Image (cartoon, rainbow, N blue to C red):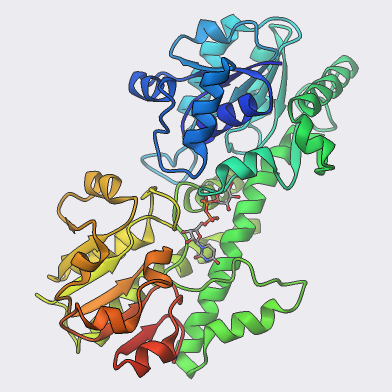
Length: 447
Ligand code: UDX
């Protein structure tokens, strides 16, 4: 099938590569000339396992190409909208500039029978607002949210755990014509063909209305963020009582209704999705007069941000009351391992705060240093882990890359550092092992 993907950022580049890999003929379109040049050479513009191979294979097969010319989207049966929806510069709502611009650019290319499939994370109600202009061309709009995780993006796209397609004309939608229900059903059938390997593998395929499809995405992210902040709230209680939040998470996680995943306590969530999505959700709920329904998301956000303060406090405590002019090695800059993404990274935020307190901060990360340096050029970066921790008075793990969490032993660290203070911002180290090796170990929500 001929497919266009409008927007070749994280979501779009992976989607384009994945669609080519399952046999479609794909053109990826973006306004960023540098990005398109890199992608056309088969280079992934960001760190993502398997993406490079996917792009190279797609381009070599002749089924994948990238362009800045939107006219090349013409003739595709399905046009995916995969542009970003960042947080507005002033306020918490989502900025829909790129969604609107991509639809404006796409309109002249649409032909009757085409399908426009929105993948971007948008405030509920966006599809109904975009639909009249798109459907005036004879094309059909569906909303098909993505659930990919950075670091697993290729796998999550090719083997998703569910597919959701929101079609127009359900009760309460903007249109409601019988013909449009049929068009929507036909569009859903075409998306079944697009995702044929996942459909053949019996992946749940949920056909719903636009509003539900839009909400599924933000509800999923709101739930995940809440789960993390729940365990981090328990960490705060553990700190007041001498309990151990990791053991608590293990114990409650055995209940299948709760589950252990996403109960990882530490400095909390960041990245390009969870923080902005919960804020945009709150802003949209306010607009709908339902702010109260998701008022708890403010607490989720607040708990999350408090954990960064806590990490800073632990470093101060570990160093005897002040970090001023003390050398601190910060292990990690990315918002999570297997990513070079530093958007809203709690790791980097903690590093910046420590430097603001006068500490001599050295940041290391296996993948994210270039991005971190662009954002915070005032910090000192050292690529090599051992060079970064050499002569440090304290080491602080804030991104749980294997090279820090599993491979860095207290015995080895002892041969390099000046002090013996280990702060575990991700609760990933074995406290007993570090203590046994003579270290002062401080974890999050641990005695
Ligand atoms: C998230 C959603 O998981 C994904 O489904 C959605 O499509 C986009 O947003 P992503 O931002 O890639 O994906 O990261 P995720 O793996 O969810 O982690 C988000 C943040 O939560 C990271 O900063 C991570 O370190 C943190 N986290 C995760 C915890 O603090 N504890 C946990 O137990 C899990």
